[in-house]
Image (tube, rainbow, N blue to C red):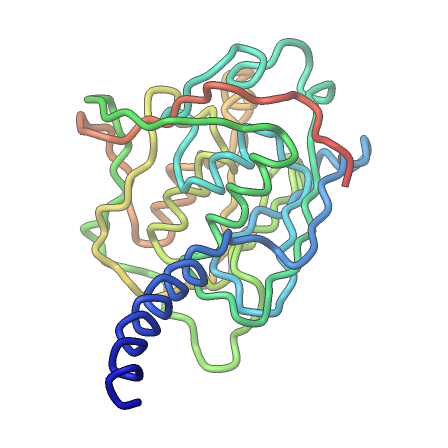
Length: 269
């Protein structure tokens, strides 16, 4: 009898070892998620979150183009994205370009690294998105500490709320405003390329500040199109300088995400 048990023990251990990776390999998915076309009259207001969302909460991304959803999911800037012209440089007026709202519930056992993968999988499911990565030498916009020193303070106790930037375009005196909450410098660098892409035509914004804290702050600027038309007002570079940060154009290396396949309209929820 003892000899029979000893033979079964290695088999049981083998089966247990096989079962564990199968559980760990479970596909990262939202508990429930909807992807819908944004309302036409919502183009001037949007919310671009970071993916620093707590387990069990609801992630909301409002009024974003598909290319911007990809940028958020893969933590890249616009100049790090390559693909078909309809995606990268859509034809027609800005108001005619399809925009989407995503509302997604995170499972209670979500860990932080899973959230971007959940969004990537959602885009793969609904837009049939397929991508691959490349590394290239390109122009970058380096986000650095200004010589005058940092002018914003780290987030204090009780400063809660979903991490991200709520943007309102063409407010008082034509100024666009973004209220950004609970964001790191790295998250700011990524979001700048969605908030005001025309200011960074040559490459991505790359965080080189070395800051790891989270901050809450407000940005105020006029668009590059307004400046080209001769209007007066702060540029996005001025808005960044007011935070005690600075952006400098440099040459550097950055990863490029290439879209091999995507559909323009998502499948039904």
